[in-house]
Image 1 (cartoon, rainbow, N blue to C red):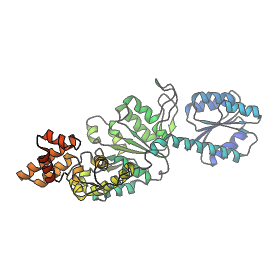
Image 2: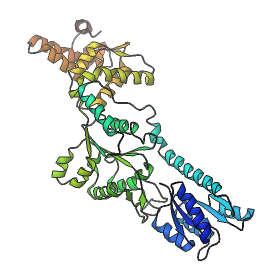
Image 3: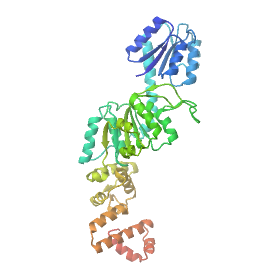
Image 4: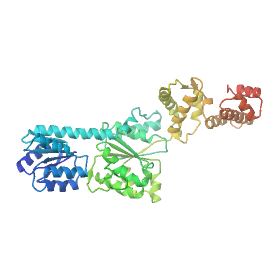
Amino acid sequence: MPRILLAEDDEIMRISIYDRLRKYGWQVDEARDGLEAMSLFEKNHYQLIISDIRMPGLDGLSLLDKVRRQNQETDIIIMTAYGSVDDALNCLRQGATDYILKPFDLDDLVIRVTRLLNHQAIKARCEILEDTCRHNHERELFGTSPAMQQVYALIAQAAPTNATILITGESGTGKELAARAIHSASPRHDKPFVSINCAAIPEGLIESELFGHERGAFTGADQRRKGKFELADNGTLLLDELGDLPGPLQAKLLRVLQESRFERVGGTKTIRVDVRILACTSKDLHHEVEAGRFRRDLLYRLQVIPLHMPPLREHKEDITDLCNAFLKEFNTLHWKSARITKEAIDCLRQYDFPGNTRELRNLMERAAVLCRGPEITPADLPLEITSKASRLDAGFNLSARLAVAERDCLLTALRHCNGSRTEAARLLGISRKNLWEKMKGYSLE
């Protein structure tokens, strides 16, 4: 809820404005003069200040100057009964956002306040525009296997609520995609989705990234900056790789989760936010708790609803759908028209994919770009995949296993020589004719 500070020494005027603003659902704090207004401003975070220009103790222009020295983000509307063009220009030069002459229609003031608050909301959305644009064509969860159906069912149940969800699973299983699916299916779908990777940011900067900082809070902090919690206000914040969050910050995060308020680094003002928290980790947090590296109370607070993303080896029946989806994406991206053969799919299904869906996606991009024909065949797949499939097909037959080894050796030499048969034959110590015969025998032409 936007918070507004109203500074007006005329009691009747102050009550009239207060009542009208409260009618529209805004949170309003009253001040009888400039000194009281400045005291409130130093303790609280306000989106907007509405101030009379002539007040005892500290007038509106002095209040404007002090506020602007501390905060460039809070909008300020100056009210005065002694208006002139020069006064208006002077207020605007000193940093006022708007200027209104008394007496005025309260509906006019409401319109101005609404416009400024809407503009602030647009600015907040623009600050995360870069992150949003990267996901304009964001990928979705794929798969019709029983394992993925369980994931879809839990998302459908939990997404419409505000419950905190802890998403676990091995690296590359699609934890962030699940988080985005939860956000898209929630009532906050039209609000910001902000993500922060706790493992990718140095320990000395992670607090500032999460909670923001004030100007001068540390060396290099030459201006105030909002943190991820503020950027995600009214939306969803994904704490990716939360298991790597440093110990001292775990306590502060727990407090924010419980109270929905915090202070910026180097600041004293309390900032309140309404943020839904989603957390991802590839670590076993219960093991981390036992090892003393993760707070038990924070784990309980995060694990309101646990969601486990299955590794790809547990739902290999989805490999066909995943390959087709990835090829559709990369064919468009690289101006290709590749498709994958059943034989290549069979090879992929015999591989365990330690990198999970991310490894399969990267493999499909490589194959789509490097395949020589319109189809991706086993010959276009990495040796570690085709070799395992061939060994499984060969069983314990010695001749078959030797043939697999010879085929792998030929492929390795050809790839090392960028397809040059002359160089590959020299490297293998055989004639070019012998290499050609072996390639024909193994269908490597």
